[in-house]
Each structure stands twice: as C-alpha cells, then as structure tokens.
Image 1 (spheres, helix red, strand yellow):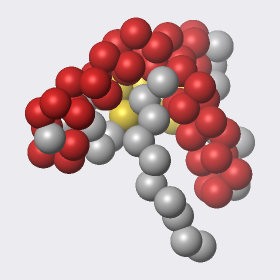
Image 2 (cartoon, one colour; image 1 turned 90 degrees about the vertical axis):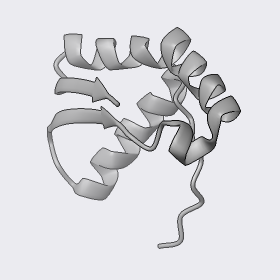
Image 3 (tube, rainbow, N blue to C red; image 1 turned 30 degrees about the vertical axis):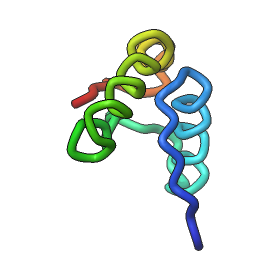
Length: 78
C-alpha cells in the first residue's frame, strides 16, 4: 500500500494513528505506544521545535488518556 507520510503529533493525530494501527495490525490490544520519528535529525531544528510544541500541548494528553483508559499498557516518546 502506498503511504503518504504525515507527521502529526497532536491529540487527534495520535488518536487517528492508534486507530489506524489497530486496523493494520489486526490486534485487539497494543502493549506500548511509542512516539517516533521526532527529533532535529528527522525534521531539522526549527520544524522539530514546532512538532515538540504540538506534542507537549496536545499529544501528551492523548498518550495519557490512552494509557489511563487501558487502550495501551504504556506510552513513551523519544
């Protein structure tokens, strides 16, 4: 399948990514949700700062909610 890569670290982006992952993987449970492909190496310093701001202000809420409600066992970012 051709994929169009979109880096969206927002609440909605993370929730959509989790749902898409369930569809692709065919699993009933995801043990660990990991925010990846974020960093200056991936995006460059300026764009990376913008992505981290979105993750900090919105995305972490999704990670916390997914863990708290038991949709995933653990979540992390690097």
